[in-house]
Image 1 (cartoon, rainbow, N blue to C red):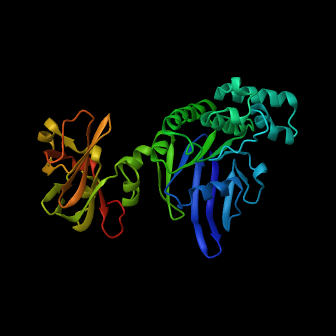
Image 2: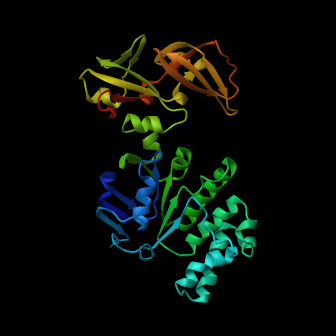
Length: 358
């Protein structure tokens, strides 16, 4: 069953098309992440689902009901924004109960919902405090709790962790994943942070220019990106790219020659073409593993970035920038010659003209 259905959705501001003929089905109980760079339309889409923006064309269905023109309060959704938007003069308990009191929810039911949300989010000791006495993470928990007490089927999150520091963001990311597992509600989450997307999502919708570039599981998006944009967007550092030619089942660019046996495209097509070869930095092998690699090369190290658990190495290969992710304890330095190996079955090929996956 689909929890949210978006059909042929268009949104224009004057002559500017923000969302174009967008279709999206979100499964019941799914954690879907809308991922993309600033201006791609992800928050705009979320606001359309919430009823905060009036769409130009198309339909939105939530739990089988057409809510295209329904008010936000009638859509059965709870929303958590980037800003906490808490009432500073009220206690945490007051912030949690305010919307329920306005909706004339019975007192016993309000008490039950607040107690449940406070227990799930571990904010029971904070109920009598005001927002000024809370940390950023505690305030965001209260903001999530305010959506939670509404007891709805669909939760919408608009970059809720972006105002927090790195450690707190990582901690709350784990809590959000546990919250979803515990509740089983449908959650739609907007972010520009690919780590949040990869760790939280059942499926990711990568957006660009008001369109969905790829909608799939994190594993599928990482290993089989639909186009060069998706491949470049996912991964840090991003994928290494080389533009060259595929002839007779082998990709060639300068002195780089990669036999593509075992790659799906080569087994299904025999036509020679201009292509872009891509391989992720973490899929480059070094050390003793190089001897077993089908493709081997030597590079000179230009830059080293020690990161503790990993070491990022920058070099040149076939006149292109080439990044390698190595073990954090790797003993390498600028100017060293490094032998590297590439496994073509873990690489990606894209058409040079369309940039779509081959």
